[in-house]
Image (cartoon, rainbow, N blue to C red):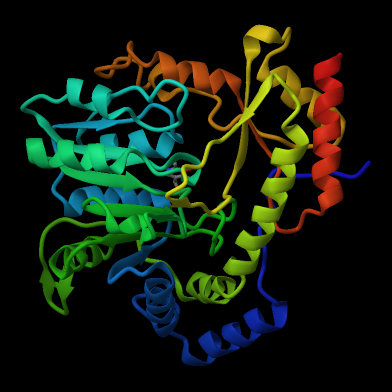
Length: 369
Ligand SMILES: Cc1ncc(COP(=O)(O)O)c(C=O)c1O
């Protein structure tokens, strides 16, 4: 039976990797701001239209480095509808996680809910552009200005997205991207921060390297979040495939939307007209009231057909043990509902049109039974 998997990383030509490796072997410059990292950062700046960008060893540590660089402390308002990394980063830097629900019928944090949770201890909002769909940036920006608090975007899903034709990372104080192997753009493990000025970029770069600011100078606390030269080389090589990967995913996405259009129990993501999306995921949302099965049942039934879908995110973070006592955790019904009705279908550039038809026909069969 053919297996169709949720995501498959694209890889550079092996010859190109070997050539980069030979280069690194000869120079013996393996990490610590080497030429491949510098080249990768430069190319990313160009691609993303970002003047102030720093690359780290993964998205999660990037978020922690960013929060430290902005001196975030006290209470931080965030969404429970995310990967656990978002809330953990806030807690790991010593701040308190406060939850605000997502909008009803949407996937992103609700600015109205955010404003209700603000106290004199609030220092920041960490919002997620879930599935690459931008948050309500105008409303969140207004709140951050009104209360003088930082606005940070976990943009792990939003590589290359544009809002009103502006790069998504040009908003707020800071945006993080994840370059994990399962993400749209990847360098196996990696992440980036985009900030809005050079002083903050200097702080970020210092913190990612133990707080070291010069040969004999340790200037404040830091961590080790450096990306090595081998992964930077993979990132540089992968950057040349990203446009064709997005293009292919757009075709697959359109085909999914057409094939699933007639199924009453399923709705798809709505992409606003002013957004250039990146097709990073293809989530579908089930009307569970009209079905006698759960999304877990559907996931398992698809697996029996060789189709690996994923309930992403299967758990609203406010309901898990380590976060259930956080402020706001009892008021996140929309997030809890969404986590129960979502399933991300396979999407990656290696899929054929027939693969999409197979997934959709499999889905129809399962729902008819
Ligand atoms: C929303 C979100 N935030 C943070 C992360 C963490 O990124 P990374 O896996 O690169 O550390 C991920 C990805 O796994 C994610 O999906």
